[in-house]
Image (tube, rainbow, N blue to C red; front, side, top):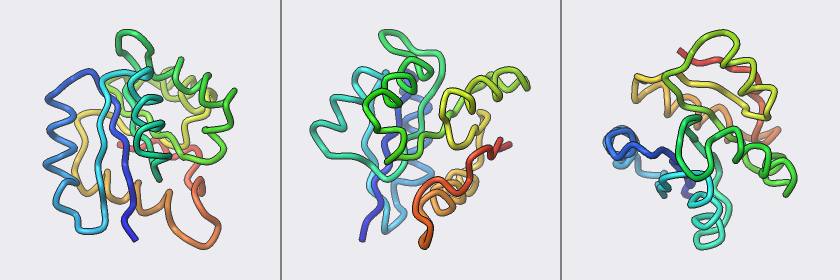
Length: 137
């Protein structure tokens, strides 16, 4: 069964890096959005993904605003959200995890790191969310 990943970043370069890193993985399907509002539209169109990777700084709806709305709608309880950001100070990581992110991966990232996060967050038994607090690299 394919795992679905939603990548949310306003940078076409970052989205291309995700495609290059994960696009050829046999059991993964990637969807993309440019901001948090588009992410909710993508979820309506394609259904809930298995994991969402989201940037913090984006126009229209940023990653933290997305997490707040995801918490209100219950999405955060069903789908693990991973922040991907160039902002990696301890305060930034803490704020992201407190907002409900299950992990925090700093840019630039290694392709194998993304795959490891996906595998850990979608591992069975126990379901999504076993990696809460993973701060990435």
